Amino acid sequence: MYIQTFNRGKNMADLKNTLHKEKELGMKAEKIAAEIRKLEKQGKTVPQSKRDSLLKAHEQLMKSISASFKLMDKKGPSHFSRENTWIWGGPTPFWGGSDKPDCAVDGAEWFDLENIVYMYGPTDEQAIALHKSAKKLICQLSSINRSPGVVCGSDAETAELLSELSLKYPNIKGGMIDDLVGNYGRNLSLKEVKTIYSNLKKHNESLKLYSVVYTHELNSPFLSLIEPYVDAVNLWVGLNYQLPSLDLDIEKCRAAFPGKEIMLGIFIYDYFASANPNSFEFLDIELKRARKYLEEGKIHDIVLMGDREVTKCPAECEFVRDFFQKEFQFKRK
Image 1 (cartoon, helix red, strand yellow):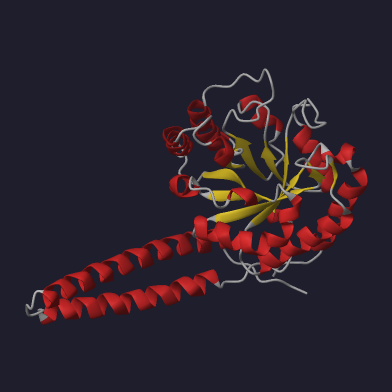
Image 2: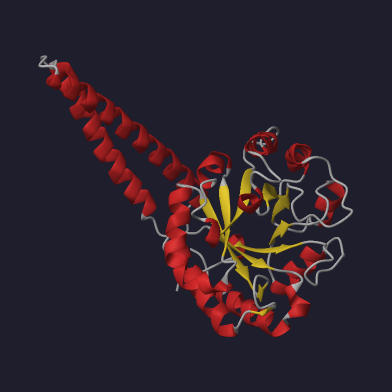
């Protein structure tokens, strides 16, 4: 069985632009229609040119709506590959973690993965060099959840440094703000988010700003404020009882961040409630659901947490690793 490949990054950018154009055309048509209604209410003659303008705007809007749905309905790969599968990890004394500076690399090797979301430790050249084996690398930008004693500059300075380092280390693809929604207004302001976004792209416009969002945060009023400055969403099911709502939550995420890539996070261990590994059945459901979303073109990547789980819950990690080993056997055209 083979899967068709395409430039999904370009597809998402095209969708974002098309949705923006659609909104502009809709607002334009509404404005012209309101002007016509006002003239009619006043008993004035409506110029034919204005009616023609409304008709043209309407026709353009209909074409744009059709184009939007064609892009939204584009299918994705039917199986995960190493290209779109990541591990999340880094040095931390919390949650049963390791202080080893390159523990995320160890985790990636154990799961036979190539891409790393590096967190908790310092975001500097020494750390980047330790992760040079990663084909793609996303690094922590914010001070949120940093390991104690880690010396870093401000979040803005870290973003600019990562932008500079990406010119030397092309495996750097972006930066991550952890737990942004829960910390918005307390540990991070909108001004700071804007600055992080701007600094990340200062030396390399292709870098993407990722933000962690939990499914239980998808009704937050803050989402509309941060959306313009988030290039990709790292979505997690933190509360296990919300897993049956994941179909709806994926759609809510797509609506809140239109045209943005979604990286779905997988907790092998339940950090929010039971403080125990998630069951094999739970993991099987979520992983197969994720594959369904990938094939439907609704998510772009998947990331596993992570490196510290290998020793905490080895049997469950082996279950997850086996799932992806089978996924990776499917060849691309």
